[in-house]
Image 1 (cartoon, rainbow, N blue to C red):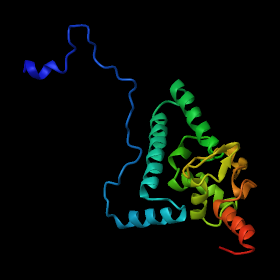
Image 2 (image 1 turned 180 degrees about the horizontal axis):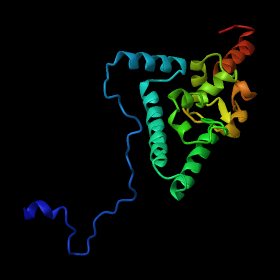
Image 3 (image 1 turned 180 degrees about the vertical axis):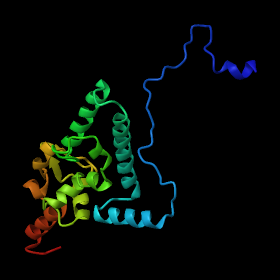
Image 4 (image 1 turned 135 degrees about the vertical axis):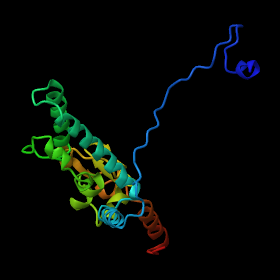
Length: 206
C-alpha cells in the first residue's frame, strides 16, 4: 500500500508537485430526450431542423437546454413573494435579458411570459435565420454557408457562428463583411482565376 502511494505524495527533498495552470469546466450543453423514438417528437424536431437549417438535432437540443434553464429560473422566482427582494432583482434582470434578444417585447412584463417561450422564439433570433430573412442569402442553408465562410458581419465584427444570438440593437447592423466579395472586397478565388486565364489566353473560359 505504501508503494502505491509513493507516486502520489510529494518527496521530502525539496521537490514540489507539478502545478496545474488552469481548470476547465466541462459541462454538457445539450441533453438527449428521455424517449428517443417518440414519433410526435421526432417529427416536430425534424420539421424545426429543416425549417431553420440546423446542422443536426444537437443544435435544437442545445436551445431546449437554454430554454429549460430560463423556465426553471422563472418558475423558482414565481414561488417567492411579490415583494421579495430576490424576486424583484433577479426577475428584472431575467426580463431585461429576454428583451435584449427580442424573445419578449416590452409589454410582456411578467415572469409568466417567460414560461410560455418556445424553441422557435430562440431559433428566430439566430444569425442564420436573420441573414436569410433580411435577404442576404438565397435560402436558409445558403445563409449558413455565408456565415461559416466569414462573409457576414454584425457591426464591425465578422461572425462565423450560425447559432450566434443577435441582440435587438445589433440586428440592423447585419451586413456582408468588408473583406467579402459580396461586400465590395477582393474577388473570390475562382473569379480571380477566370480573370487571369481570360487575360492570358485571350478570352478562354478555363
